[in-house]
Image (cartoon, rainbow, N blue to C red; front, top):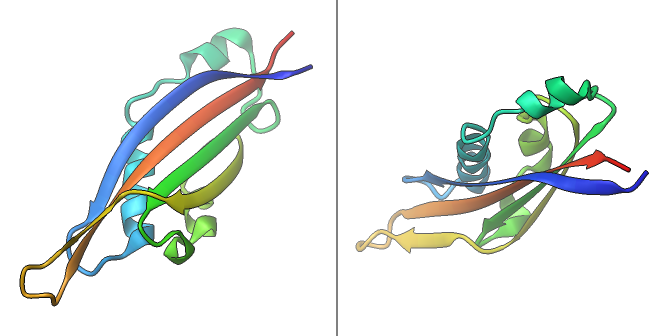
Length: 114
């Protein structure tokens, strides 16, 4: 059966001090997850371990600094894939000693539907 996207949630997160892109990414994913309820899966009797596919895209200024395994582990359900791309925003400290890293997250859920 073909997979069809049934949910798309967006979130933002930040690390205000230290420029930790993984921390910002994790907060963005949690923000997205807290906007969503998966009651449809229970109604359709979908096994979230085998029948739900979750694709996460993280946007940060330095995508190679995101620990994708940590982000993947933060998702409670589904077969999860994570990628990081150039995006988000770095806000430097006026004195140049610190950076606030802002991440964007898109969490898409697909189901195999006829």
